[in-house]
Length: 247
Image 1 (cartoon, rainbow, N blue to C red):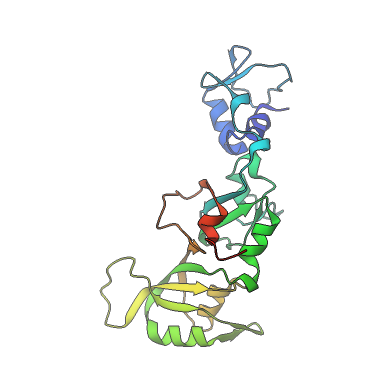
Image 2 (image 1 turned 30 degrees about the vertical axis):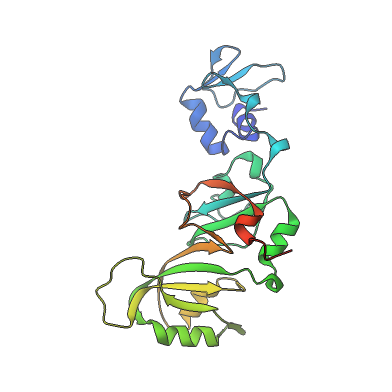
């Protein structure tokens, strides 16, 4: 097996990340530093990363049930796409390549995504009957009268033959704004059921341009309450996401 595939499989990082580690001279095989990405690893080879055996790294047998991932813009929420090589899985270690995601974020959007090997957990997060809400921080090109938008979005707007509805809409108050009273460029929107590109489609009906769409919360798991850099992941528990509300 090629050295980069071997290290990625053991959970040292994504293939792109482990290639950087190999090229920086941090990997030794049988006592020799290896910087050749085409190097083939044999079963009886002794492999060290920063002086430690890589076989001691967390392997697939100890995979966590759920991880939280902070998606950067410019990456698809997909396992693969023939038209776009940058998917969220290019940023994740090999250990998580077969995980399923609980709801997508489109290419230009960013924020919290949950991935799991537990189909029951994915069902709990995504099925409308469980009513797991998701919160988004929206940045608009121009300030809007937020109460008017809130009333219309909570009542429901028609787009593409569907009624799109928000559970709540209010100012996000992320930065001080010099706008007239009742107007803001930053909104917090909570959805119970997320349809494809729902928020962008809702604003499109009002001819409003979305500059940034950031999913900040799923259920009880809120990126404002723990540090998670873009492009990184953390292991989380079902209770952190759902509390005790979903059987």
